[in-house]
Image 1 (tube, rainbow, N blue to C red):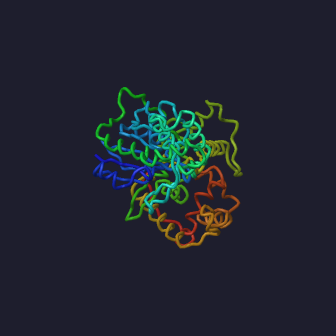
Image 2 (image 1 turned 90 degrees about the vertical axis):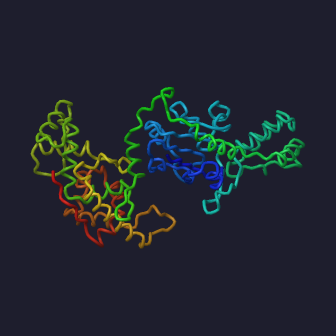
Length: 432
């Protein structure tokens, strides 16, 4: 059994390992981190801190997918408390005062737990105070009779009015009002760190946490097309010491395997017909299925000289078998191309291309997402590899599963340098 703890400014690494020996400590959780975990039965995932602004936050489906598998997931303090309050019905466990405030509807804004902090090499040092910590300190001071309820409300509103990255007790000034002076004097003797307290409680309670059970609402509809696409982007394989994402492997095979267009067409038509790809009558059955659903009469293909059946089949394959980059998922890889030899060949080429790319300057270092190669250079490189004229590239792009030249260029550009230097990779032939 392994405990994975995602933590940053709420609690330091030493405190985590002291309270939960053997825990695997990870940085604040972000989108994709949970999908990349090598989880096994009995493991626990404890979410404390998370990213939300500089990168996509952990999505609800990512947590629901773990709950669906029976993995124990719990949260406290910050992003963990927020997600637990949103998903407790489905079996995510919430621990601590901040979780209860969210779950009971006392607070509902993400900014209550938002804060600025230094990077990992500076120990995630806090650069601001979260509003929820100020809120609880003011509440305790009011309960102790240090400030009145009206003063508590006024001081809370003053803190709320400040952007989260600048929030802190420095917004209060002793000379401004007697209430502020009394509060700050009390705070000096009664420091409050609500996030740290809740994080410690979560770690001390880890042994008592339970996985989702019959009392929790069942999880459904997690395995969407979006989730499948996230999965391949955040799942990696290692080949000969090189780690490559499933997304990059699929793209390399889609674009460069000589048998991909025919196999992808066969799989698409088989799915339309509701038969296995190995069925020898795939094309006839696909035409029949399209006719039954009223899909004929809309056949279109720009190539001249095609008979009616072939024109319709190309229209069906391109209409049902093309996707955008954000929808690339494992089902786009025909089963016969998922063998170990093919994946290893794709991984080797992707790794070589990445090494070449690492040595190339970008046109603008301030815009790392900008391509190194122009659209014309990308098109020329692949037209040469595919043996077609650049003007006919779009049809080949469709037959390789992508819906537009623009999205093709997005996924194809990282391989251009490798193709120009090494040529296309040599894939083993399929046995289908």
